[in-house]
Image (tube, rainbow, N blue to C red):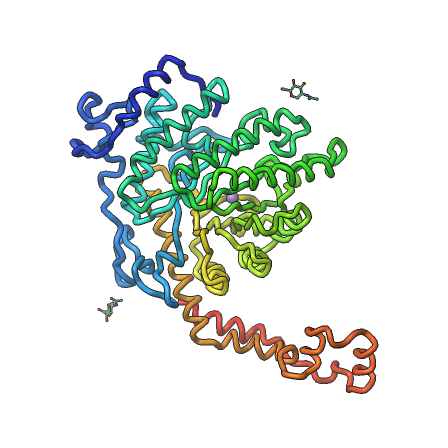
Length: 488
Ligand SMILES: *[C@@H]1O[C@H](CO)[C@@H](O)[C@H](O)[C@H]1NC(C)=O
Ligand SMILES: *[C@@H]1O[C@H](CO)[C@@H](O)[C@H](O)[C@H]1NC(C)=O
Ligand SMILES: [Mn+2]
């Protein structure tokens, strides 16, 4: 990703950008039909053409619709369990997967030739991609987006130059979001691609790298604040190890704790109101990632005194990599008071790696949304599509199909979770299973309230029949039927 461009060009851009305004009349519909002179002022980051000229605004058409460019379940303004669907779901487009994923993988080169990516100059390409982002969101009816600093702006020859690039692109984004309800759901710093982060960022054995990473997070947080971002995420791409043989585990983990404490202090020093989130992942790219899963991350936050200051961003595909289900990770986060955001995606049942596909399974979506309902929403968080269309899907239309499939699946999941809650059968089954803990004056209440210890419990066990002869059924099969009844 590291690219350089001339300082001279940058100087021109700095002076020209102040007058950037995208409010002029659109004079062309397709990028290729726009003449540069008339429709496009690259120095100012201006672009008046469309990147998706054949895509209309996506509307809710209901279940009878046969139009794949419509929502069949997601009806933004419809009220479900007392809140609008758009409030429960607060969808977000992931900038990197949508506009920067070019289809390259370890075995092959890029397959996608996106129209916003035709510029040779990386800064010009960044301006265009930002315009594509806003056109995409507005047609999709989504008003949140997520970004890494290095997705939206290119790396320069020095950190100062890189920061300037980021400022220029942020200015274009700020201009584009004026008069809209669009803002970032979260921002983050990409601390894993560049070779300087090969041994880690906050957990690098080299203190100079720790400092560089801190500088990068500081800047990314400032840009997130400038754009009105509601959260700031830490996914520690290289925070982990390949072998314990050459690793000081204790120092690396302590440094990660120090880094997060500094990030929280800095957040308060600039008055940034967004929530800080850790995103767990067990492996990839390192063999062992420190934020392994939700439980590990909660223990980390607890150890370093950060449990009040951070929440978790749960990614479904990371949950399955850790050997859990998505709802397990969400539930662990929820009961610890740290469920902050969902990176909605899924892996492939037949592969063991991070495929980042759109989550489309209705049952999985129901179980995910049931936890969100139990949590009464996600607070400042939302649902970010950390998902990419397949390498072989190469038309701009496919980007819409991917997001529509994901949005409709989770809207369907929300409707199902509401039906499950309103039917009450599953909640009733669970309440029955745990009735002995709830009965007034009963043994369970005595244990919960700390009224008894081992001596009293032994006395109770000696004077009562062995419970083994009267156990109740767990009724898992019946529970599955109740779940299925609500999964429409
Ligand atoms: C779908 O079509 C059927 C048959 O025309 C109609 O009865 C039903 O009300 C329609 N449902 C919706 C949600 O529009
Ligand atoms: C740490 O990084 C700095 C800057 O690249 C370098 O000069 C120094 O030698 C490194 N120290 C160690 C111990 O690797
Ligand atoms: Mn992933």
